Length: 242
Image 1 (cartoon, rainbow, N blue to C red):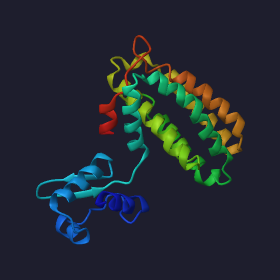
Image 2: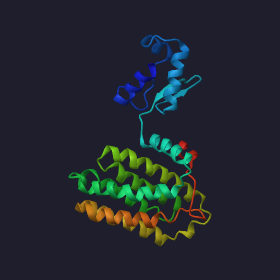
Image 3: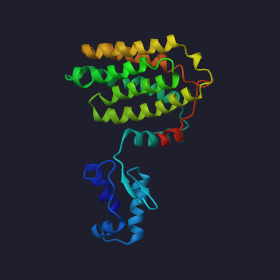
Image 4: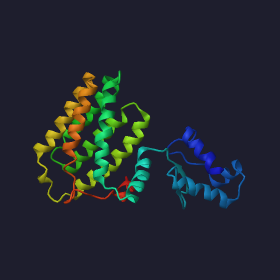
């Protein structure tokens, strides 16, 4: 019951992201239960990713609002238990991300709320072309941002979870790449030019056109971060540390 009530306060926004829960003594005044019951409630919330319990001199429980990262980890656990590899995640992204990008183009306030943010990210990526790790991270941020700005909360969470799964894979690939020169500057620039074209179509409100271009772009860039057999396991450790 204590966990249910605290969870409801977090989801409702009474307890904000980064807030500290009251100390144990104060919580027991609000919820008159035994210490083991209160600590079990904290363990439940920590397992759900809603709090982080800090121990020691700086002890206390820090509140975390649920995010697509939480959903991504849970989704990753389920997919890993089914033996699913990241190529399956990539295929799912090719289905849902273009819908999100199309919704960005359909927003009436896109020239104020969407396009400037995407142009800024695009400019940063162009400035990092010679650094495979940096440009890969910025490119993934661009894709995640398009999903985050689509305006549909359900897609933001569902597609956002898929984005996080793929981003952890692609970023890990960029860090492990023995010879970044294998991915030429020209190919990196070509990928970013596609980003620029997508921004222009969003700016113009061309929902259908940007959906097609988004699907084409994903099918091209997803071919890079592959293992030798084209399959790769979902990296839960990378997700957990994100």
